[in-house]
Amino acid sequence: MERDDVIEYSLNAQHSEEEGKKLRKKIWQVAGILTLLTTVEVLLGVIASGWVGVKWEVVKYSFIVMTAIKAGYIVFSFMHLGDERKFFKYTIIIPYIAFICYLILICLFEGNALS
Amino acid sequence: MSSEAAKAIDKKTLWGGKISPFSISYGKMMMWFFLISDALTFGGLLTAVGFFRHKYSAIWPSSEDVFHAFPLTGHAHLPLMYVALMTFILIVSSVTMVLAVEAGHRMDKKGVVKWLTYTIIGGAFFLLSQVWEWSHFIHGTDLGAIEVRSTSLNDDGIPYNVLNNGVIAQWTNKSGDRLEYYEQIKGTPEQIGELKHLTHQLHNSSEYSRKELSKINSSFKELMIQLDLNLMMPAVNNEGKHYIVEGAEAQKLITEGNPIFGANLSGNQYGAKQYSQFFFFVTGFHGFHVFSGVIVNIIVLLGASKGVYHERGHYEMVEKTGLYWHFIDLVWVFVFTFFYLV
Image 1 (cartoon, rainbow over the protein chains, first blue to last red):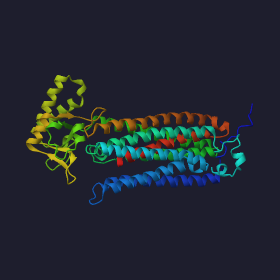
Image 2 (cartoon, rainbow over the protein chains, first blue to last red):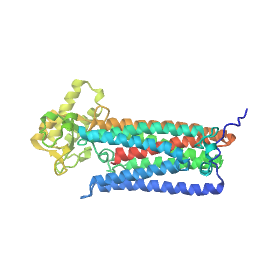
Image 3 (cartoon, chains in turn brown, green):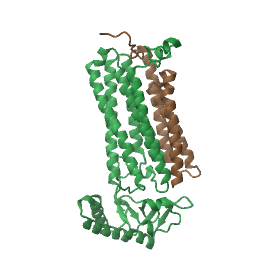
Image 4 (cartoon, rainbow over the protein chains, first blue to last red):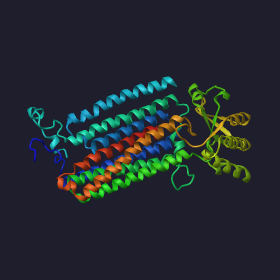
């Protein structure tokens, strides 16, 4: 028996041929950005180890920034979290970021203290 | 995509029951919650790597010195290039996955099947690369390294945590370059032949009894002393350079030391054993996710090509496995940065 009290959300995401074209263009753009960032990371890693006068810390933080940008593109564009409702977005993102930041802070400080 | 979730709904309807306040289906929401819990596991593991890295910073190997081989290029020095290629393959398979999801949204069965197939091929390539890298890491270099006894070291400049963990010294020549392969050794043909014979036995140490092994060990050490090699200590001096031990002092360290080949859970020829332990655990756990992702993708591919989802009227199953597959890519982006690059 068909139930009429359940709303089907699965059809929400469907789109037409023209919209699909636009979306595919965006997907390839994001793919380009991700590839570019990975290439820059690797080249920087290879080249920067030979640089004199540049602190490794600077290179390190640039890696972390690039990784965060890549993660943002994957989560918000590829996983479509950017298209979900605002509260769903926050339910997923905020508790995770808050907890992980706390964990990183503790572990790195403790690791330094024990060395 | 954004049409329904972007629509304004008045508050009474939104929170009044019957509909999901998130305008999202149960399956997709639960996949997100599962991914959050999984992300916490990976976050915890990578943070633990950071903890040990900071604790044993003096003897933590640089991944550039460990992973610089590329299949079919012999001994070419290509630091992190193969890992970069693996990362690229995984990103591309993520792109083909999102294209499969997009095709599903247009009810394009052929497109879904095509892009899912590419995704599976990418995942399989990544897994096989992982196998190659593991076997390479487990096997180690031709010459291995030597674990020296910390009591025979002067502790000037060598931190306490290093002494506590066992000190791995690398073979170097007179100009301070690391030696890893037979071709880099200068010696008579007989010496090289003997070296190959002994290291071959030591690489397969499980085939020999303890007594035989200690004999092989001591003749290997004698040979290395004859070849007059220097040792590079893991600790760095005030100028930021590694200590090089040479001459009589190096001979003493070699005689008292213990040769070590490759890496496993109880030792690592490149430095801290925690490095290899976490390498196997983190990449292994991720690899297991890739493996199960490939299996799930194959099941969904079979369903899609049979027309199960077409009959259902929507391809949400592809969307759900897509979320899982993107998550695998997301985790690898972090592993790549925090295990290999930083």
